[in-house]
Structure formats: C-alpha cells, structure tokens
Length: 384
Ligand SMILES: Cc1cc2nc3c(=O)[nH]c(=O)nc-3n(C[C@H](O)[C@H](O)[C@H](O)COP(=O)(O)OP(=O)(O)OC[C@H]3O[C@@H](n4cnc5c(N)ncnc54)[C@H](O)[C@@H]3O)c2cc1C
Image (cartoon, rainbow, N blue to C red; front, top):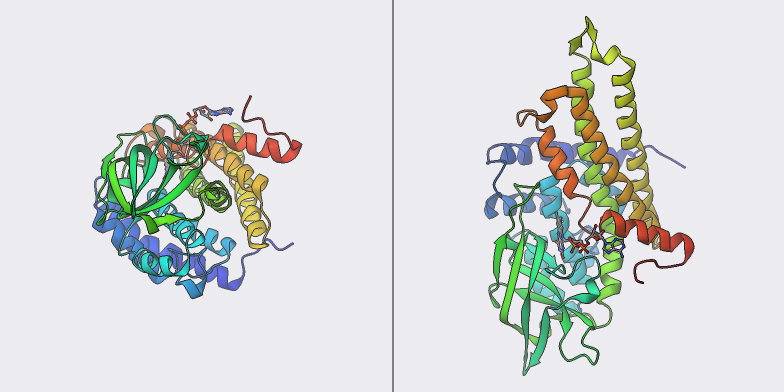
C-alpha cells in the first residue's frame, strides 16, 4: 500500500493548480458570480483542458483520447473549481459514452470536435417525471424512414443551454413493452432543440437546464449502442464519475477548511485566539478528518476502476460519504467564522450552496445508499 503521489502525479497536480490559478480562476472572477458564464468562456477553458488531454481521459489514445488512469485524472480533477469541474465531467462522460456506444465510423465523425473543445456536449436522461429510476423515461424516439423522431422534455441537464451535441436517453417507441431505453446522439446544428436555463440554488456560474425536443428529426445512424445496453453503459460510466464528484466535494471541503484554519489563527475573543479553544479545534479536527477520509475513499474507488474492477459499492460509497462530509465541513467552517461565515464576500455561502447541490447528480444520497446496501446484502431495495 502506497499513499504517496508518484513524481508524475505531483507534476500533474502542480500543473493543474497552475492552470487554475493562471487561466481559470481569473475568468471566473471577472464574470458575475450569479450568472452563467458565456459559452465562449467555457469553450476556451475546455480547449485548455483539451491541450492537456483532460477532455477524454477514459477514451483510448487510438481513438483520440488520452487513456489516462482514473487515479491520475482524479488528482487533476480535485484541483478544479466546482463550476468548471461540473461542466468538464458532463462533457467528458458524454464523450466516453459516445465512444463506448458507437462503431469507429461514428466516433471518428463526432469525437474530434468534442475532444478538442470546439463543441460542448452533455447527457440528458432526467425528465420532469423521471429521475432516480431512468427506466421510466417518457421521451420517445419513433422511427420514420431514415430518421428517428424525438419528442420529450429533459430537465436538470448540465451544459444543456450551451450544448452543441446531446446524447439523449429515450424510450424506443417501437419496443414491445415501450420501455426499452435507447440513446441517441443529437447534433444541434442538424437537429435543433430548445433549451432553457433553470434558476437554482448553487452552481450559478454553470449551466443546468431543460431541453425540449419537439418533432426533433435525427438521422437514424445517430442511434448509439443497442437498444438494451443503455443501462449498462450508464452504470459503468457512473461508477467512474461518482468518485470524481466525491473529489469535487473534497476540493470544496478543503477550501472551507483552509479558510477556517486561517481565521482561527487570527480571530481573537475573550482575550485569546479562537483557535486556542478546544471547541474550535474540535471543529477543525472534524473537518480535517472528513476531508482525509473522503479523499482516501475516492482515490481507492478510482484505483479499483483502474485495476479493472467494477467498484460499484466503493464508487457509490465515495460519492455518498464525500458529498455529505463536504456539506458538514462547509457548515463547520461557517461556524468557525461566526457571522462572517454567511457573508457573500467570504464565499463560504457560495460553497455551501454548491455543496448542497452535489448530493443529487449521478444518483442522490439515498440512491447511493441503496446501491451500497444492494452490494453488501445482495438484495436490491429500490422497488417494492
Ligand atoms: C447539479 C445537477 C446536475 C445534474 N446534471 C444532470 C445531467 O447532466 N444529466 C441528467 O440526466 N441529469 C442530471 N441531473 C439530474 C439528477 O441526475 C437527478 O436529479 C437525480 O437522478 C434525482 O432525480 P430527481 O431529481 O427526479 O429525484 P427523484 O428521483 O424524484 O427523487 C426524489 C427523492 O426521493 C428519493 N428516492 C427516490 N427513489 C427512492 C427509493 N427507491 N428509495 C429511497 N429514496 C428514494 C430520492 O433520493 C430523492 O430524495 C442533475 C441534477 C443536479 C442537481
């Protein structure tokens, strides 16, 4: 067992930190923190990532990706500001799915612009009536000659309003039971769709929105995979993404901890530094322990995936633990700051809002609990 980063991982971590401080943080700071970033800013940042091989780490080199180890990707991902990490993971996992679900001719056509960051993509599964159980999707794709015609509405889709390509999970309208899932690549320039940003609690510089497909005509060859393998592809890619979302939580908790530690070292009450009181120290210890535990779980899950194991339980456990621990850590950092913890100037309130939202995407806290429960007992408790 080796808990140290390798020399190469240290370099990766260092160059990710520099990329953030020199190129990403200034962009975020120069735009309104309450409004979605302009699309060209997100494209510019994706292009920076593309140069470092970070837009397609799970795609092999022969297909234009960088074929990175997930642990190495995690080392980079942990350094990213949450709003950018959200946009990147939605883009990256969609690229991974397009590659996993299409034959060479298709990915050669669609992937280069996405991997280079010239276009932005997203995955649309969630709908107004369908969230945790994707098998209930109502968006329909019916076959008409050489085309698939999509009708339906998707909600809470990261990158929706700035997307050029969306991979949409549909119910195959011609399936006997009407429930077989099918995933279809929709190129907005060829098959236009409408989008609308959702006003929300956190991630306010990001893009999370609705997509409306009305008689959206897509070339038939844009169907991905087989109509029965969508759940498998969704599950294997979720397993890789969950520890990455956990590392987003680690990033936020670490920032909150760093602020609290610094404040505890300068703020005086009752004639002493608050950091010299046992209760403030306890808050700091609880935060540090939660961060360390979350980090270990997330990297262990990623290492399992690198070792070729399914890591279903560990991936769910890491996201479940790290996101909840992060929310608690940010809350404790607020406590250490007293009233200052709530000021917009300090930024902890923004972290708190962002952290709360992390509990939901890629499976809610409760769904992660049920996944781990199923892996431990062999009994699925999702359905009655
Ligand atoms: C920031 C953000 C980004 C997102 N990005 C995307 C995206 O890019 N693409 C996409 O398709 N979706 C995306 N989503 C949507 C997300 O995947 C869904 O919101 C999530 O799967 C939950 O679905 P729901 O909101 O419909 O809640 P529901 O499934 O309706 O659940 C409501 C509540 O019931 C609980 N619950 C449900 N079933 C059970 C059960 N069997 N046992 C116990 N409790 C249960 C849930 O945990 C939750 O507390 C995003 C969401 C957010 C917040």
